[in-house]
Amino acid sequence: MAYSITKTRKAKPRKAVTTAGLITFDQFYDIVEENVKADLLDGQILRDSPAIPGHGFTNMWVVTLIYNYNEIFKLGKIGGGTTTVRLAKYQSPEPDIFFIRNNRLGIVNYKFSVVGNSRKKYLSNH
Image (cartoon, rainbow, N blue to C red; front, side):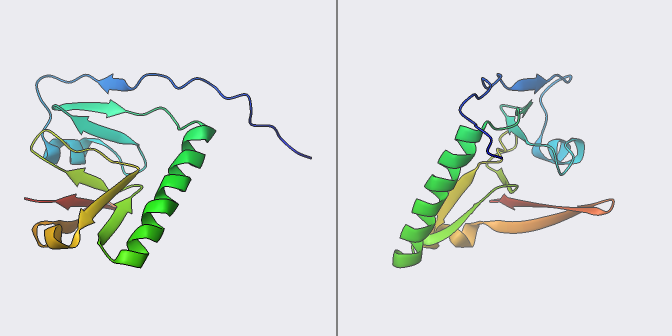
């Protein structure tokens, strides 16, 4: 039996989680559970709707292109998926894909945080 995915739902706008004041990276890390897709942008937590099939296909295509190019030229490291990237005190997106040049790898820390029985991973330049 074949299923058609030509009928896709429209992506809903991201939902802001309201809190009093700005949320810092450390607070964001404590608040958001490991399996929840969310970003910290300008001190506000934004939760994503589940991705539509077109997003998954496009994302996989882009990741494959960048990965293969990087494998040939060894330009740096590629990450993404469920890795949170700490950019500043109030900025911490969880991008689908990111790239760090070899000459910038020294300023990046790969950290694990153990919360209860789960391990979260994130990149930080702090």
